[in-house]
Image (cartoon, rainbow, N blue to C red; front, side, top):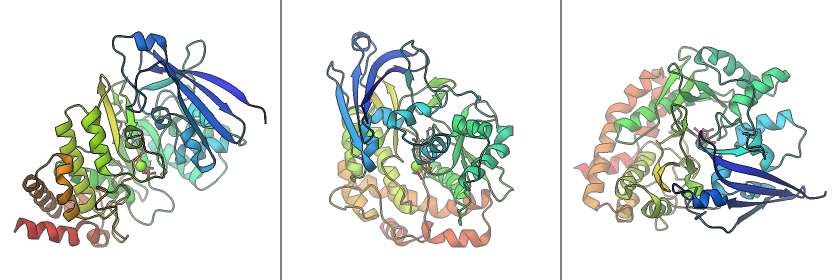
Amino acid sequence: MSKTTRRVRVALGEALQPVGEILFESDGRREISLFRYAPAWLANPSRFAIAPALPLSETAFHRSGSGPNRRAALVGPVSDSAPDSWGRGLIRKAHRGGLTELDYLLAADDTTRQGALRYLDDAGQPLAQTLPSVPRLQNLAELRALARKSNAELELTPTERDVLIGNASSLGGARPKANIRDGSGQLAIAKFTAEQDSLPIERVEVATLALARDAGVNAALAHLELANTDRPVALIRRFDRRGERRIGYLSAQSFIDANSGTGAFYTDIADALRGHGADPKAQLEELYRRVLFTILVSNNDDHLKNHGLLHVGGGRWVLSPAFDINPQPHRQRGLETGISELSGNAASVEAALEAAPFFDIDRTAAAKTLADMAATINNRWRDHCRNVGLTARQIAHYRPAFDHEEHRFARRLAG
Ligand SMILES: Nc1ncnc2c1ncn2[C@@H]1O[C@H](COP(=O)(O)OP(=O)(O)OP(=O)(O)O)[C@@H](O)[C@H]1O
Ligand SMILES: [Mg+2]
């Protein structure tokens, strides 16, 4: 196959401030890209690096990918604004194959795209503006039916496909979801109960985010819609929008410049926060609380794309509200992102206490945070599960996720 080179301009926010450009080439097998900052951006007094791994410079940043590693063909912050498995599945259904990373990126809707980066044609017009406007809450049941149809591999009409691709493909992650405007008109993510879910995953996700807030973690705001049906929907307020304003977003993977597939440690995120975080001390404390919470609620889906960062100006970043925390009652306990090289992937609060100094926290303070958090979880988890409609039987089923050996350790510590 002959090589084709495509050029896309990269811009920022509602004002479409020119930031740079991407040159993209594919020979059908290997895909390569160059990202380069625009001279106007380098001269702009409010310039900043769009990721720590892309310091402001006239030099181009080269990336390449092929096969299972294709997503490495775009620089991290751009890749973070491209669809993930759920969105890609939708896009694939509408095309005959042969899609490149750039095709996936540009198939996602500009209005709902993650973060603040936008992609423009040579005339400066946003690419990837899809026709249907973001649905409102009153259309939620219809949207749920469409997602279900797509998930069940049923044939969608071209209009249905457009609605779904337009509104649902921009989002990351693997679970079925769509963008929607909530009751107050704010962008939110609707996460659907999937056909194959044998557990009340979305109910528990909403309960766990509320529990996290009780436990002192800054977690995304979520509530349940269509709660009295057997397919409830978790509605999670988009934290990368303030009104219509777009807030820069990076996955932790891009923030620490990790290769997908290679494990990394919370201490790597801590190090990056020391260098690029706004108020690093507060950020390290928040990160540490998330480690403890993850262990105490048996969340083992804490991969590097389930942690995010928001841009607060001047190339400084803060942890986004916590999201996608899924307690697992009966899986082997372990972390996707290990605490530190010393403890590997062990989901151990004792290891977390030992690692406290790596987060600039002294051990006594860490032990107190742990004891308080464990007590809050113990006192509140059942209520939160009840509030989202779990039955007594389901609550009993989830108990091992919220009450286990790590809690016993925390209780012993509290004396
Ligand atoms: N409240 C939010 N506001 C903005 N972006 C969000 C929010 N919640 C999640 N995201 C983004 O959307 C992506 C997908 O969301 P989420 O992780 O909840 O989905 P998922 O399908 O459960 O993921 P996974 O494949 O990890 O199970 C996240 O990786 C993050 O980039
Ligand atoms: Mg996720």
